[in-house]
Length: 157
Image (tube, rainbow, N blue to C red):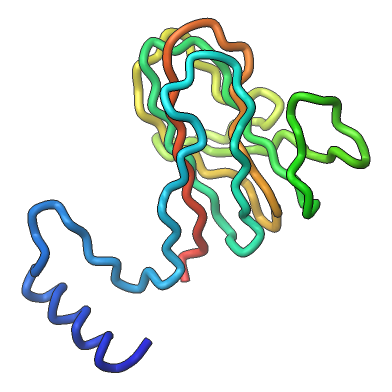
């Protein structure tokens, strides 16, 4: 980062320029905007995988309206995006991975997932995605409601 850019960012932060709901991204040279994985989904769905190889953390925000379903997080270290609609194998390798709830710090086993029973809520989960090439939330056991999921990768550098 150039010296001039650092000075300008400091001035913006000190003066509060850009108020009205905007944010200053101080030290966010590795910022990755949130990626929409599911947009108002109302069924069991095939996920959009996120390339996570260059990042240490993957955080997913789940917004639900009257949702009864389970969301499990999957990841792989392979260079090829797996398919969650066919059986796991040597050529379609992935695993259900642990996550933890940012609301209360509770660890959620990958095989169990986040279980919703008529929930209308916003929740955030950090995936245990260290060294994963690809990761995604997968909606399983869907019964009712709508689900939105956005994820963002980063490494706090």
